[in-house]
Image (cartoon, rainbow, N blue to C red):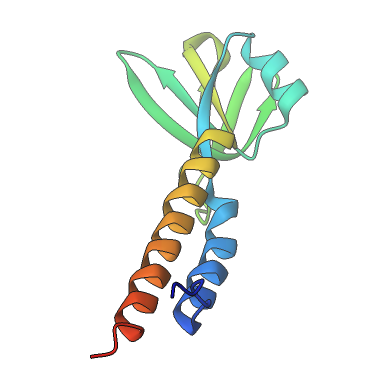
Length: 127
């Protein structure tokens, strides 16, 4: 007789871990609007800009001061970098990604279900 798998302690730990990593499902999305408009409309916590010959730079806590975009090279950095808006060829903002989140939830959830099914088959085999 087949019994439905009972969630194990490992499943609970994996689901707790899933809840902790979901906020990390973010990615950079290219913007088509000018830099000043992107900064005013989105108020991003991080941006990736392309300057010069395809040099990509990430800026955390970016602010637009007059016609210069300033920000930190890392989230915990004290140093500030500054780039004139005229030198910025492209800008991408960091936003929540539904696709990545659904993929992560599906992969982890599927793994947990397979694990529980295999464990229930292992314990109910009678050997």
